[in-house]
Length: 519
Image 1: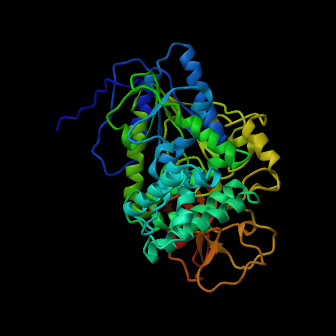
Image 2: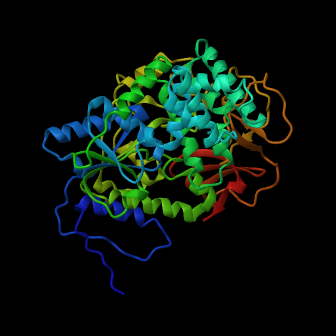
Image 3: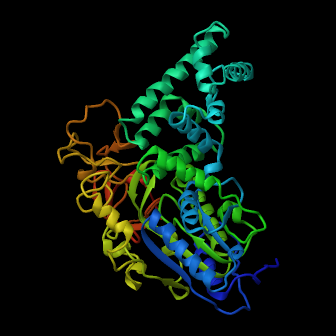
């Protein structure tokens, strides 16, 4: 057996960090990468208040590197999920930083985003023929090419927009009854949405349009591998609209973004997913989004268990070793995922990096000082090395304070459980309830008493939860256990099938025993 262990790409600190991380995988052949290159800069870990602040920090660092003569072609941002790209693309357009997306289209060029924008453009401007033609039969309404050609002929003959031609044709007998009814229903929907545009927030209007048009349902029923990612992108699109005062301002911003076409030969930052990065290398690599649930992906853990965790760790190893000179890992304390604000636990992979080769840099408006989630991460040695932040003056923190008590934020400024908060402290459940990780849901996070009673499993803001069964647990105090989300820990108390576990990384949690396994 000949091991190919000499690495000609990365510096000593980067290789040591990657090797120490991947050593936590059990199903691998032993191999330790080495280099004869200099140690170089340590891998840095930085926390931000939210994903917007994360993108801002990356943009500022890239500008500083550019001023020092660093080529943009040698800088890459590697994300775990494609919807993360949107924040960086918007930020780079604002800064005037050229960028390219590798392995796929830019965020606003994706098919599902173009479709959603086409609906919004027709609402805003009924004379936008290109947008109307794009969505007249998306999702399928029985309005094929022949119908579209008929609309074009009618519009040219009378010199009117396609939407007005559709309104006129829907009142004639030129189409078969099914197609005529579909076209009439679509026109009525646009009339209703335009009326709602004057009274509803533009984000709420966009959600209504995607639901009532059947577009969201179309992707929910789609069984292709990328359907879930397309739905995530649509939710990210809705979130991006929150930064604008109205629909008109948002569409103007999109026009600006889409007009920034750049030559492939131009010096530009590369943005791609970790899967697309295999085999590539760059002088400087940014790795944002290292948070539990995002990286490692909760979906992968749920589907594949420990094998999925090891695959995610291999992806982390790939990301780190794409860097020749600098590797910068980042996480956000708060991130909006699946349409809900969540306070995040930093990725377990951060605890698996070697202290000697990692530098934890101070983040303004950061993680530990802000106090949200730090209790879950208090056992981490990264907290002991250095606080993740020392200032409350950042835009993210100020934005949270401006939203105190409304818009999904609690009175402290931290995002609520779910998006809309809990209303009051009265509960419709007096017994402990548990989420889909087996973790006991805090009482203040449960549905208020005025919520209607339900039969079957209880739903909290879209998450399925289950009550404890009360059976006697096979685990005892002192047992060493493993949880897919929180890692290893020791059982410190047993109450029926409910365990209180002191996790090495996440602190003390109360979980149902079926969610852990003995180690």
